Length: 354
Image (cartoon, rainbow, N blue to C red):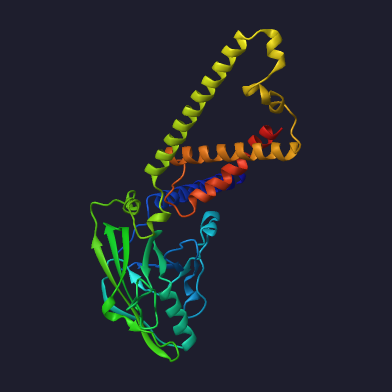
């Protein structure tokens, strides 16, 4: 009986291991849907377009909420560092079901809520949402009649976009692309922020077949994304140009120093020993300062060690990104990898300082 129980436990363990393996394999290959399966849209954050590092929770603005307590999603370390605040949205979407128009909620905005929306629109606030870990962005509203040169807003009109149109691309039974857009024809004037305003929040859904886009390559369309300001994008050509310029300047400085040292050595070789002791010039004037013991030794050693550690961390981070050790497109992956590498290279700083 003991052997039978042991065998049963072993089979149960193997079955559990197989189930976990199949679940991990399914997660690695993406989620598969059946027609009419629910698809969840995640609201993340809002913030000014010209300062993407300044972000706030999506429901810091008075959008429509679901009844009861909303579900908050688990965040990894890197997602916390980039300011993600994912929360379930009330949008009801099902796989392959187009929606022409659906009323999300009717809401009467109080004057303070109207003012919060108006201030956000003046600051060019955008929102960020996720569907199957695919990000999508859109504007909250627009300002019309603003003087672009003087920036006067007294005569400008502020409009809120209460309708969102979700365009979702699919390949067989997987979601491979998402996009959200607003409808300028359904905008609501909220210029007067001293009175209540009735707003009907709504949405529509369109499913678009994308047979040419696989689930593995679904992030490729974000490589050339230009939603965020160009000043916050990485310009690899400028980085390479600066690196080459530093190398050239270092080479020129080295050549100049070598020529100066060569001329000094030649002159010292031609001077008699008696004359050499009378007058020192050139690089010999600072030979005593080069080997002088510094005053703040501990601080100097700490700075050198920290610099060496940062250089190693940067090099290893670039190496891991190039070799595909982690996915740079995943939310917060770069920041998480940077923190882990900085902790692992701490011994380099200690050895260099010592």
